[in-house]
Amino acid sequence: MAKSDRKNIAGVNAVLTRKTPEDVSFERRAEIANENKGNLFISIHCNSLPERTIRERVGTKRGKGVYKTVRVADRSGKGF
Image (cartoon, rainbow, N blue to C red):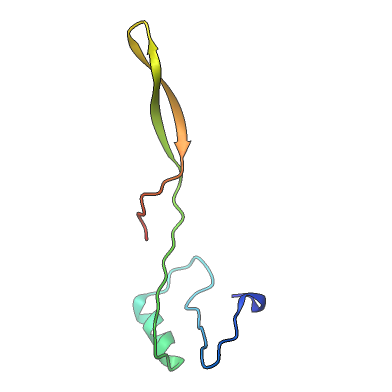
């Protein structure tokens, strides 16, 4: 967390378990919390999801469906 992003709240000290995309084991996260005398451990997970490609029917031509391909944001919530 950049210094400018930090909020001063009396008695509260946030300790990040990682600052890179590299994974940190659950055991190591617990160790970090204990090393810092943590009273509360909160784990927030937010993953980026790729866009989905869908085919959308836009009409009919000579008795057959006419489709167009559309890319949409994946809002499935998978990965949270």
